[in-house]
Amino acid sequence: MEFVQRLITLRKERGLTQQSLANAIDLHVNQIKRYEAGTAQPTLDTLVRLAKKLSQFDESEIMVAKELLEGLILKHNAKRAFANQIQEAK
Picture 1 (cartoon, helix red, strand yellow):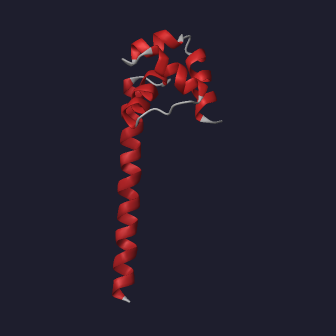
Picture 2 (cartoon, helix red, strand yellow):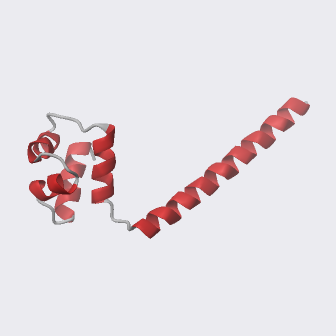
Picture 3 (cartoon, one colour):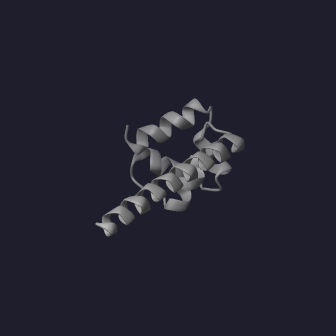
């Protein structure tokens, strides 16, 4: 699903109007209309604010997911370092 359709779907699923979404993320409603029409693209900062507002997760769930992701990254980095040590030993 492309960004435009995903934005519209998520906004409606959350019961938000374009105006209420704009207010919630401190943006002018015309900008939300442009995003949904596909005539403008949000900045990275705006994407983060949209994601936070439209997320289905609460803060505790986000923290758990972040901790799990950090653990997976550490595990991946450890495996990579081990593989590099083996390669260097050859």
